[in-house]
Length: 499
Image (tube, rainbow, N blue to C red; front, top):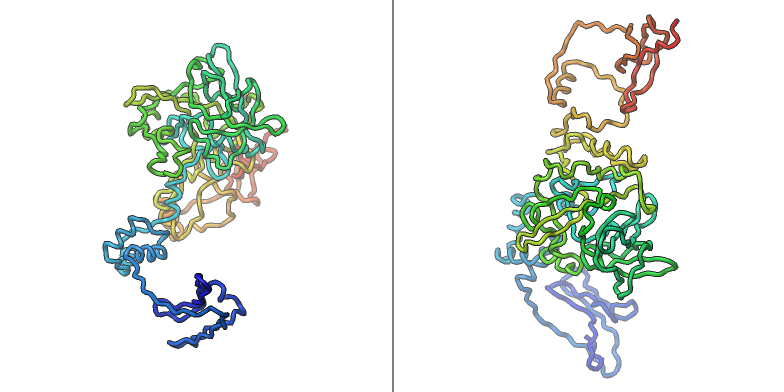
């Protein structure tokens, strides 16, 4: 090291028996005069720059013993996606037997997949069905999600069709004590006191406040967490997120058009609290509370009549009549009540639509390939926005589990291949294996091109374009497509104009 007063500047280094090399810093620059030449051998020649007065080079050596924990962490940093305290302790307990660890990983530890991790942890709030997915469990279905806060991160998101955000309005309604909160004209909660901004000023009644974006949308997902609204010419303010309440509102079909669902006891196995930040996300406890999100972990309500008459949340445009200039995708909120078995107090929840990923793997394929989702979203969404079929092409990794579906809702190909299949023994065996059904070959049948049917009776599309159709009893044959799927070619007899 070159000494300059009390400061030492590193010049070159050699560690762990390795060759000398320049140290980062002043002497590593081009033109510094430092030359390190090891020539590929065991010795190195260093040419040192000339020093000024009162400067000198100092050669130092020291030893450093790496702790077992540090050595394990260094190995795991390279061999995994990052060490944890638990993985370090486990490796140290084996005296850092790296060879044994690698053998265990390759031959004993089950393979883990990013896809599996993604599916297990992908369950976001999801309000609108769109190309790749649809809203998951409905209110009474198992795994439906419920919340205690009135405004959610989905209220902050731009609507995909209108490129506009949602609006909040505070009203006083005849027959209801308190102040009613409406988001795009739909009821969310009622508060006994007139709402205020975080600075203490009152919100105006019957005024539309635009719910604005935030740096992190999940910041709003808790009672008391502020959300930003704007109005007028650049004015803005933060409003504390109120708890869900239906006090004094039940019986008002205009505000609560759906039955309030009776949920299992909050905190029970059938209706546990989820997203407990203190246990799972300690850095997010400011915005994620332990008792404000719940999961219906039972199918006990699926056979009840409580949710009869509810719209399909996969078809948001089922409610054609909107209020307050709301987009067609807005559905009234569904509310539920539960009793805390510890306190005996009643908790009010709002249904919180989420995305749910269904199992569709080679070992457990969806019976219809996602066809029901396509049907659910076909009419209400614009062309191109409907949920797409989730079948994949037959390949080496799914051919054993790939089988023909006989469900009416099964996905169909966009185009019908124009292929000729020879019904010989080998192909019949292949079709039998593909469909998992027995086939019986019948020989000696004669196929005639002449055909005569009654008026309006459809004929299968097995006829070629060049088929000769009998005109006896009919003056013409019409060719078209079935109205149901617009794919299957049909022929039918047209008796119009017969004298």
